[in-house]
Image 1: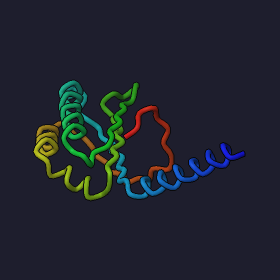
Image 2 (image 1 turned 90 degrees about the horizontal axis):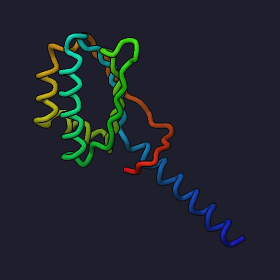
Image 3 (image 1 turned 180 degrees about the horizontal axis):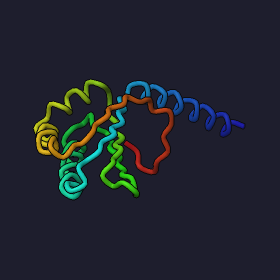
Image 4 (image 1 turned 90 degrees about the vertical axis):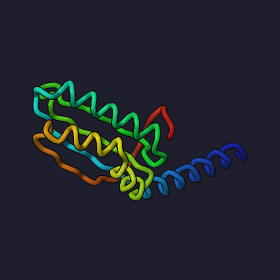
Length: 126
């Protein structure tokens, strides 16, 4: 009984901590369409930017990127930042500005969507 009570308290505590973290996180979805002829170049540029941001910026927690199988020039990015200020810091960095400048001519359309993280299941912890 004592073990069960201890486990329940741990689960409730973890749930509260996760809830607080999820409320502070800034999540952005990016829907972007690239000129089909620039696909390889764009993917390389995007990967450079993402890897540098995750490596150098404490507030950049995660990027997930997918493209459509039938339309590989259409991407959806899921960007997760520690908070909104971390996002604002990110878009001022040299690596992000380089990405924006170099990809500008490749981009056919761009949609930014602010989102709420309502659940997360992963084997990798931040």
